[in-house]
Image 1: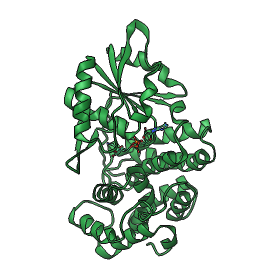
Image 2 (image 1 turned 90 degrees about the vertical axis):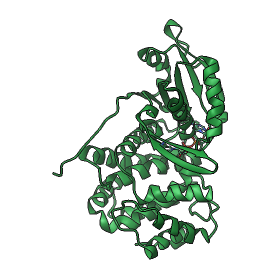
Image 3 (image 1 turned 60 degrees about the vertical axis):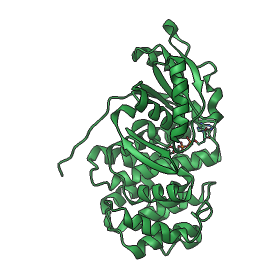
Image 4 (image 1 turned 180 degrees about the vertical axis):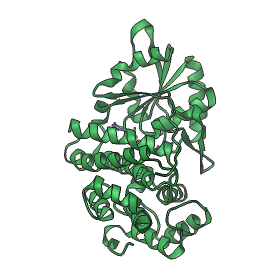
Length: 357
Ligand code: NAD
């Protein structure tokens, strides 16, 4: 066995149906009295009934300002409100956007954060924050932004629409897939990644068929937790770098872009990552993991190509050039022709599949 390194950040995790009821206890455990809810406008009413518990510990106000990609001007507006509430804890409830704003506020205030994820993005388990200013997204890694506690309440995911669930689940699965072949992966990370792929791949079609399937929802949220740990523990490669470039350059939606690119990115790396392919074959119960991911994507009610997501066709050449400019590690070296072919196939979607290798 190869030598390895594994680091675990201290984080209190509660998982279950109805586990939001534990919020007062979690606040008490952190010795906090005045939590403030950070969320999106769409989930702003979540404050109702939240967190009034023993010894007067409560969530005292709501800041429903979170937006995709954590714009710095929004963070500054929210910061004024956090101070006005006299908050001693940030309670971020929602998807990656709400948790991103919570992290940006934790960075600026040093306040502890409780994350209550309602999608499968996985941000709650990572010390990573992406922020946007003047149209540029930059990413930092700092333990201060890592939530101190995470409450996974399966019931909060029941309202997630099928398309959001599907895209978000594929976004999570991308963390696990890249974790399987990461340079700094270790046996524990690979175990988590493999089980995450198994659970998420089984859960997503069931959720699309019936969003109220509580067991499938639990499996997907469990998988999302594992995917978040993998994302925090292992370096990501071509898939994440391409999605970052595509999102930033063409303004494509985050989770949907991950969903479209994932099978193509795996096809690019497949011949160079035999152990990861064996783990994926086992997790997906197939002898062709690339085809299985294409099949999974085709069954989901989300855009199937970068073209359908609004990327112009000449973006294929631009994205190829940008990906080659930004040197980073990938198990298969980055070469212009196959990279362009990957992006061309992802731009065209299912009709182009079959030529990938
Ligand atoms: P999101 O948080 O933007 O949520 C999408 C929409 O779904 C929002 O309108 C939200 O209000 C709504 N929604 C969320 N949960 C719902 C529910 N249960 N029921 C009904 N509606 C619900 O999308 P996302 O994909 O979760 O997050 C994307 C953001 O997260 C991006 O900015 C991305 O960069 C970031 N992210 C960061 C990390 C990290 O480690 N830093 C990891 C993954 C994603």
